[in-house]
Length: 172
Image (cartoon, rainbow, N blue to C red; front, top):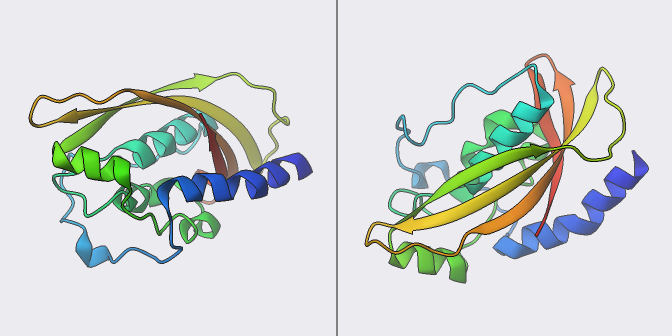
């Protein structure tokens, strides 16, 4: 458990720094009204791997034609996280990648694969899972960006609503 927390503390600035996060919550009114395409499904509850994969998919699913910025994906990922994690994932600023994607009016396709990794054994209240995520931006103008692959490591906590991501790190 101590290693997991240390890893999270050490890598959190890297994860947040990649997006240039400010720590400020997004303005919900800046996001378009939910549609079937952008509203996440009901979170899986009984399977920690499914929750981690759904969370990883949500934070990497972007549509520059409708999202106010990259933070919109994190806003949509809230059904998959604990209240404790809900606040720190808010502020993600626009960066060069977003600008390039927006210039092409890009949306991402995301594929996930649950990985088997060495992790502490599950308990009644927490579990650890890892998911390989491949993100490919596709522009409305026919442009396709270079696929990006990373690993999302999730620490999940059980609550009355089932499993939720309580902390995470990414690599790659």
